[in-house]
Image (cartoon, rainbow, N blue to C red; front, side, top):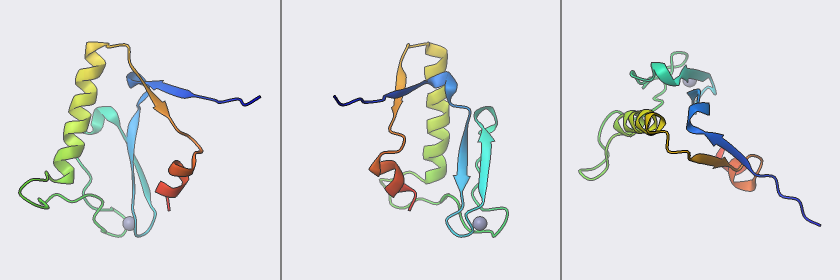
Length: 99
Ligand SMILES: [Zn+2]
C-alpha cells in the first residue's frame, strides 16, 4: 500500500514572503500586509535581492512582478473563491530549488 500525503493551504494562510539573500543567506520575513514596499537590497551585505530594472522590453522587472503577485493575492482573498494551493513539501523539486 502506498500512502500519499497532500498538503493544501488557503490563500488566507499566506502570512508573508521571505527574502533569502543569495550572497550571505540572511532571511527577511515580511508580513503580507506590509508588502506595499519591496526590499530590493540585502540590509546586511547590500547584495541585490530582486532586480528593479527591466530585463528586456518584454519582461517586467522582478519588483513589478512581486507587487503584482501581492495585489493579485489580496484580490483573490477578497473574492473568497474557495480555492487552495497544494504544497509539495519535501519533494525532490523543493529541495533542489534551495540549492
Ligand atoms: Zn546579504
